[in-house]
Image (cartoon, rainbow, N blue to C red; front, side):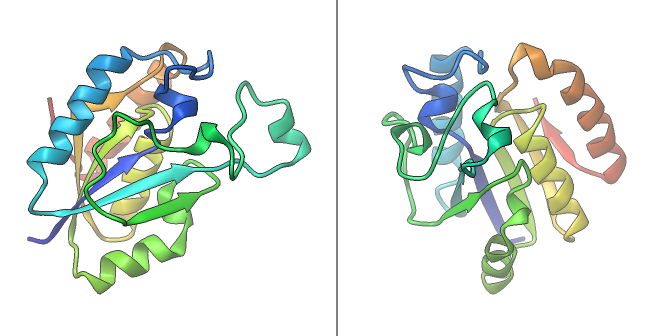
Length: 170
């Protein structure tokens, strides 16, 4: 088994000190749990995913903004960075960036563990598309934040992920 840990959207806009009001997590606990998962995966490939918004009319009205080059898109200072493997995305699914899949194939990765934010959005969509791309998926609930407004979506996605064969760590 060759495993990669995907650390999803641990950015200032989501969990930083001045995060957008849309995102509501127990930030300190989440950051500690994410860093613990990173330490536990030190022998595996660790990949960081960064969500960036395109400057367009729809995003102008979004409840938060995180554009390329802004401090909002930067990873939080507290995040343990253990590799230079960073992939950007413009939608919820990390596999929307074809370079991620190419990179995983080049390293012969067959298993992906997902952590980060949000359990009702980007983490779930990435996990679903990882399975569709042929990867075994581990959803590490101990290191995933879900904002209250997305809890119902998370339950729906969790059901789908279980049906697709994802493994969950609680």
